[in-house]
Image (tube, rainbow, N blue to C red; front, top):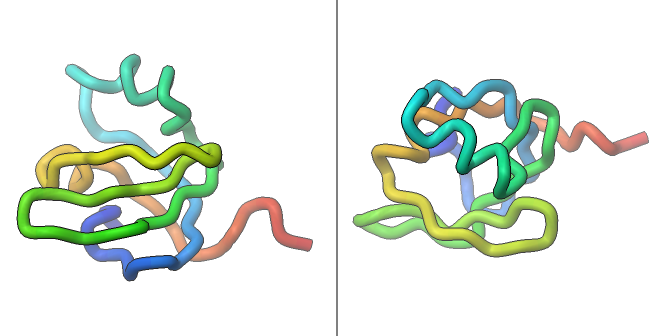
Length: 76
């Protein structure tokens, strides 16, 4: 599901980044397949997310191109 569909404070796992223009920049920021991510806050203009212990702001357009699945990949 797209990141924009996720709930606040839910731990998710990044499955795929579906953008070519920002892919390398997002990868440098820690948006890689299998990495855990959670939404800290949702707003009308975008999301604040937590990746690798860092809070980052994403536009809704960019967040909709990041696909995630439920569940913490580092559990158990």
